[in-house]
Image 1 (spheres, rainbow, N blue to C red):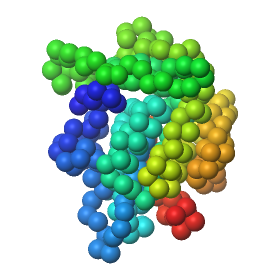
Image 2: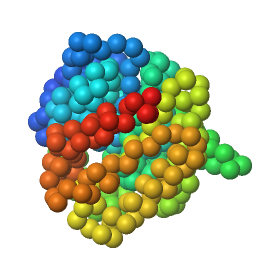
Image 3: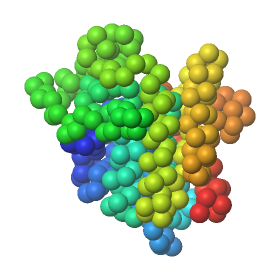
Image 4: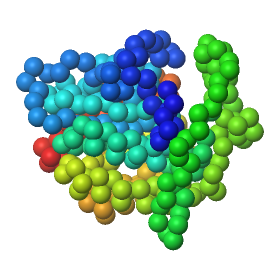
Length: 289
């Protein structure tokens, strides 16, 4: 549903099916359900934020990596991921949810395309906030985000979305599905500055902030695509380490698999892929904490 600051957020209390038929449950706080808490769960929660890879597109509630991390770690995990978010929206949502839930740790997942999305004022047909530079400092713009009237019924909008999302980027922009605010490449500069806001979040709420690098399945099939995705992801992770944040890069673990692409449904991780991400995080929790 529309949100004045973030553009859109999951609708609290929603219970139904995702676009591919997988079960989706959103709780009263607008977070995706991670299932029943482990019987011994106690203490402050871990907060997961990010895009569709954190939210868990193409899998049911119990197969997302936040839900599997909750089961593996025995600690409560809040899934604040939102499909389609840019890196800017991820940071803004982390700030909002950390203030509300006081987590002991914030895990911010991202893929390289989230950096490109920070260059936009509209993505996936929805208006969003963006950041401009003022004297080499970030300034939030585009808020309150205007709410666009949608005259078509939901079933028709969903069908149109499925058509437009498969079009080349040039046609998507022609139809206004994506609307650019910054020149191509500017998103990386913005994202590197946003790392400082994540570091400040950790200091303000006295919680550990972890940046989690994830990858689109095309990285395992196209070397040219892979080189650029790795370059952008590594630059962001390096800046995070320099700012004192913890980082987890999922690439090395998936890269040793003989068929890494088999850990995806279509464009998102399947239950096995999400289990691998959850196990990486669970194994690191003692030193991350």
